[in-house]
Amino acid sequence: MAAVDVIVDNLVTLWRTPAVKQNLHWIFLLISVVGSVLKELELIPQTYFSSSKNVLNVYFVKVSWGWTLLLLTPFLLLSNSTFNRSVYFLGRRLLALVVATAVWYTCTETFFYIEDVTGSCYETDTMDVINKEFMSKVSCRRAGFHWHGYDISGHSFILAYSALFIVEETAPMAFLKTAALSSLPRMVLNLLYVALNLILIIWMWMFACTSVYFHDISHKLLGTACALLGWHLTYRVWYLKPLSPGLPPQRHPKEQKQHA
Image (cartoon, rainbow, N blue to C red; front, top):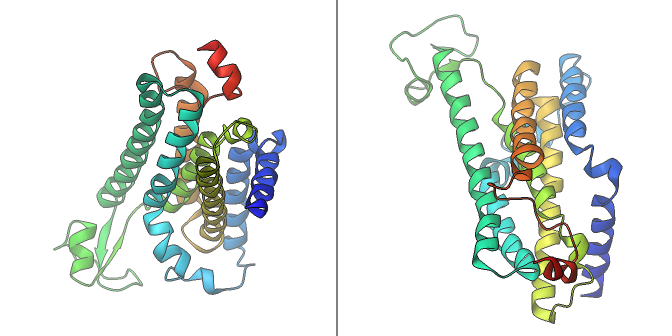
């Protein structure tokens, strides 16, 4: 496991670099803007990732929130219990998962609703013949036709939001590197941390692919803006208040116990 320890150390060092973590939200916005401009100017050639059927999109992005929760839930439980094992503390921290899921669900459902109420059903993909029989995206597509509405980029939203969420909730790893843990919890924690960073890399790569290959520029910028707003209102505003899930632990476990 020595190799995993080295990887964990390097990842922790990366995410403790102020220029990286503190500016990650701006990095997503920059990628969205630059990628959209490159798409409009048609400067990026078509590749394997310009198809929505690529393996990362089919097996990861389309179920991205599931992957995020699958890996982050056990990490959150294990890492936070190292700081404080009280039911109240762990319950508050788990509430962060509930809040994030509510943000994800509310935003994606709103995007679907907007696309429905602003769209029309077309019989061809050239959008020259409107079929007024079908008044929703679902019924239109079931009939084999094409629905065109204001399609806020759900990919831009969920990939940016998931990445920011993961970075916030894995921050305690900086203090857990030197915590006194037995071999099994340490191994599980390290493997989960590496897996979460791998998922984070996939989310950032697919966010960039979305920016240069899919959607109109306003669709992507609005989806990205919703992700940044959801993250900011929780981790930079609400979670600083007493009646909230609170931020992830900010001190070494020994210091945390002394202050408990």
